[in-house]
Length: 255
Figure 1: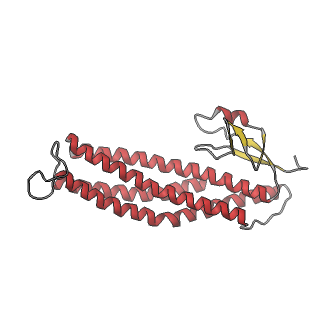
Figure 2: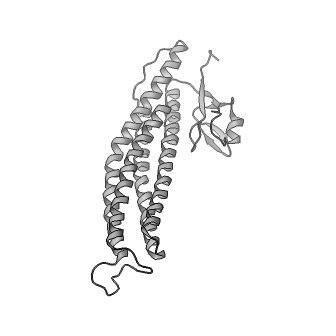
Figure 3: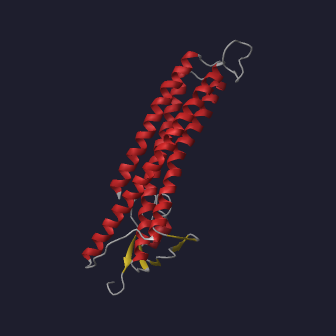
């Protein structure tokens, strides 16, 4: 499902890019309106009007509320699109594999599979919302530190760009990891639905720093319902962050 990963990341990036452009534009405007002074706090210090620190804080509070609301609003539809796409692609791939082996199946949305689907949607909603909340919280703290240390507009803009890069990398990790996890979970649910009880762990041989325990698990069989005991916990291929491993179903009589 690499195509889905790329499409999901692109949609997340589009939201993040819009938020970043808005933050940079309005925070730079607020900064220019009242450049911060060293050691200013949120009070007006006896001077009429808002202090530079209060001006920036209020602008960020308003921007934060606006963009968190936009991510919260976008999250359910985007999460459902991703989940439906993951199910559709995984089912199509599994049907094609079974067809090549001489099996013809028609998948339905059974109750166990629907539970997996709803859980996938719920997890995506939380993760999408968290992209904005973490980014906005960090930017808020960064702004106040900029005021306290007397940083200029150029430095503040550079700091915003650095934080933007961190958020983009996190979105990429979410897209990759959730794609792997969703595919693995859907595949396991369908295997159990078909009465497949055993599978073989297959290491992807991808990534610069593969987990040694996952490399060692390559080719070993495990119970589909339990997973494999690796590093002291029962897991399935693709379940952990950045795990690209997959499974090969063992069909009795066709091994």
